Length: 382
Image (cartoon, rainbow, N blue to C red; front, side, top):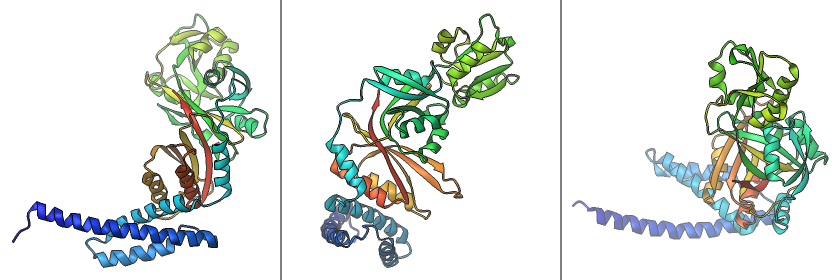
């Protein structure tokens, strides 16, 4: 006699009820295990034990279901570790640092500040700096590395850096420098980028033999440059530096890709006002400090970490975030110098360290990572 759908579902409901009861019992027991590990100074993660269980239950499930059983138990282990971390609140120097920052949230970033920016007057970094600070005293740097050094050394309490562009992607040079410096992100903002082709007054487009700009700006205008294959393309430190170079060179065969503000600032004329690949071009900038500070409204967390070079290690890290129900807004990978095909990862998560569960999650991610850096909890200006 065939069962109808209602009978099948009734049986499934009964199984689900039994599984839920067993799940609750298991979670209670693993918490006791975690408390024991905390007392003995042992890590919550025990990969050897998890492997033994997965091998046992997948064998019992049979060949047809073994992979599904493995996936189910991997998810169960991730949920268990997240629950353990929340219940026992493991102490660490990172946890103490996060709790201190959460207890001392500041109302707002100072209106007056000395800020390190790469480039010169008219740079997009200068424009975003003036948005972030009402009265900014800007110290211009030659390179992105100089901005990091100025903040890390205490020369400037704040620094502004571009981190990604909607057209050209991540500013990889900045990401690669992150691993070499000690800093924290305290604010982020997006700047609309409107590139113009600028030259000395009276110059015609047919006269241009060379275009200069920052490498990111050149990538953002790749279609325009590809349409003029006879023009030489030269990368410079900054769009504003390129505009200034054109203004002082005296060359009538030279043009810069830069902003309209640079045209006014350096006495240049606009040869073309539509050189960007897309009209909706924007760049995201971060504001950094040396010490960890959290300001009111902070709702985004950035992390830098490396996963163990073995199958499933990145999945385990991502599952911690998934279990918490948090939104992962960015995942960036960069090669690790000196290590073939091993990568460092940058995560952006919508969360706040004011939530104790989030602080527990961050510490759990640290425990499960080979290398881990908490980059900051901050607000992104709209």
